[in-house]
Amino acid sequence: MNDLYTQVITVFLGFFAIMNPIANTAAFTGLVADKNREEQISIATKAILITFFVILAFSLLGNAIFHLFAITVPALRIAGGILVFIVGYNMLNGHTSKLHSPENNEESDVAISPLAVPLLAGPGTIATAMNFSSSGGMTGIIITVSVFAVLCLITFVCFIFSSKIISAIGKSGISIITRLMGLILAVIGTQMLIDGLRSAFTHIA
View 1 (cartoon, rainbow, N blue to C red):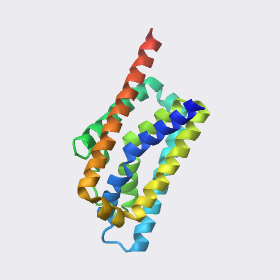
View 2 (cartoon, rainbow, N blue to C red):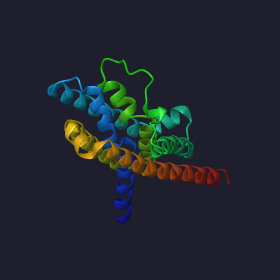
View 3 (cartoon, rainbow, N blue to C red):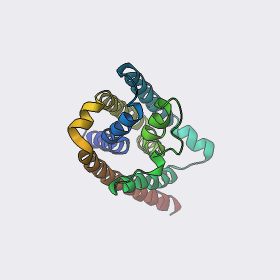
């Protein structure tokens, strides 16, 4: 039972750090500042739903994707660990990772891009979901999807009350939270990399 709680907490912290609801709330505010309340709610709802189904698909089809492209779990952990570490490192230094910064933000439907992809369901989030879901069988998938659904709900609430949250926390508060999330991500990415290398060397040996 303790292992289950530990796994849930680890998955939650991993997703919370990489989705960073507080920092993305600031991004959401900037993208929908010229929209009325109903439009903002509609955009938030669409973005969260797309994000959830993207991660759900990768969580459920992880093994099929592995077989299709002949990918091993250690390889995913190594690549995913590097991606997550890069995102965390950039956040820790107060910068936005290019993995979460699309070059073209002129897409008319901001719910799809850049909100859903790549801000919320970026490469790091996808790699994290596939890593968590592939490491625990069906239980791992259920925990990953359930925890991510909770994070989506938290993010949705943050988006809906974005103006109040930004006013209460301020730019300095968002900067501090972003750096803390970056530290957590860097540690998780490093651990994923270590686990991947250990598994790879064990397999070779």
